[in-house]
Image (cartoon, rainbow over all chains, first blue to last red; front, side):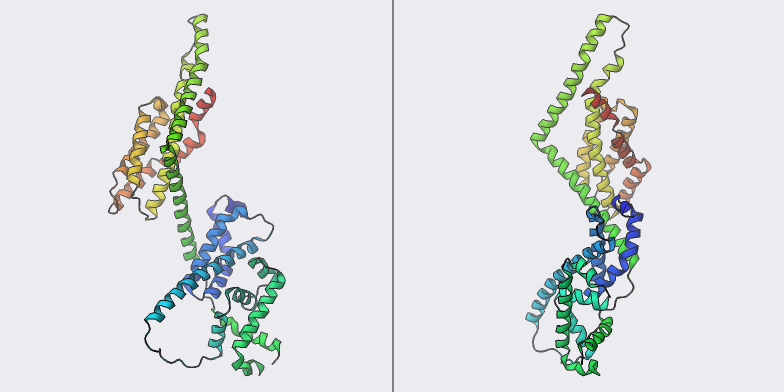
Length: 175
Length: 221
């Protein structure tokens, strides 16, 4: 299949795509939380993979190599989106007059969602990959190009931050 | 509240975090194909522009001129002693086949031109099929058209196959050179149809892969 992709055969490219698209899309969606963005990130990841297939030397599994491309595309994409959104927020804040409608206290689920969203992207990626999508530290460290220990340390820090943010709900998981 | 309990809670509760829907496989695949076709066209267009720009440079033009002169010069030089020998040997000798060699330079020029036409037509077809603007194409087609006509009037077209190919290219280039822009969807279909019917791109690629003209040049060199 890899030889076929290298030769630019559409059938081989399609086979590679079919084999890996679901996992790439799941990760992209978990990180982006938006259908359009997840679609764009998945698309870009495969385009880059097809373009760079010559550089794949077969030392790692194809899935590992593809995952590292996907992770890099997702993190770069999120950085760009964040920059754009910050600019928009800046404009909206300048235009806003007075306070908005008061919001009710969020429940635990909302609070958890907000707390995960607030994690730095790299910590969030490690947390999502490990605790949500079930990747091993070995797979995470290869995808993010970091030491195994760093992956473990970042997960631990991410969990600590979440615990801190959810302190007011401590009774819920203690019971 | 132990750390284990918290981790267990977190893993369970986080399953709802941005829960993904089923992946839209077909849509993403279609977008990938479209994007890759557009990139391919862009590469072909860039290569074509680069080649055109390079040929506009006086240094390259002089270089090509000198190379062509050398090819013809060496070719004639190789033929001359044999012809002289044949004169001494008498009327039985057959110089006709050898006399065909000087057209090698023309065939070389024709092959170079076919390469440029192939790049141009590939870029044009991909652009027009993907709905991208083809505004510069009529000008570029006119330039290629004038070279095609020069080649048709030169010994390069002595070869029947080359002549037919050049004539078909001329026809397609005339159509593109008369293309009138955004309103011309029907025109684009006609051009596309014309290329398909005559298998112009396929024949160009075959001619370039086979490089029949190059064999003559190599023989001279």
